[in-house]
Length: 234
Ligand code: C5P
Image (cartoon, rainbow, N blue to C red; front, side, top):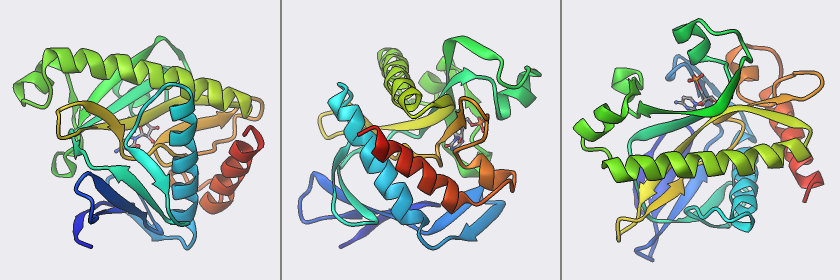
């Protein structure tokens, strides 16, 4: 089937059904916009299992997404949408880029949670966008911007609660949305330790890609432990 798009961690294929795509998770990991890059056998499987489980959990908690079903260890079927090139980041505690940009204390609480938009453009290094930039670039209307923020906060509430059950704390995460043929905005892409910052409530140890970014341990062992914790709350 035709390859539609290849990203750093996934390939998207058309299927015989016009409204269905197949996503294949790759055994690759990158950080710093591709500056750091490695092949890790088994990573695609873990991301696919975790992302499928998270989308399923979301569906049972009132949040619709592009996810249809997992069809193998490394593949899932999703509804065909056109990705809106905005990375929507939600922050519950300060970490990563915002600590550097605004000189905040690491893990300073964000009350209420902060929603930010970044332009999904590798060549520009994904710059932060104001609402006015989003409208000026024609990426979303004012009404859609409000809908994206509302959806992001609702997703945050469900994800936080899920992670609390796992005795983990959700620091921040990135999500992407797409538009279906009718123009309806749908949660898309992936939610996994690649796209979230998650720490153990007690030990503060990371359960996310920071392990790889900062060379503090085995990414595969970390993601495997995260997956086991998810299985345990099912
Ligand atoms: O780098 P920054 O601190 O802004 O990242 C915020 C959150 O968004 C982190 O959880 C990070 O993993 C996620 N993110 C991502 N993909 C990007 C940029 C950030 O998943 N391109």
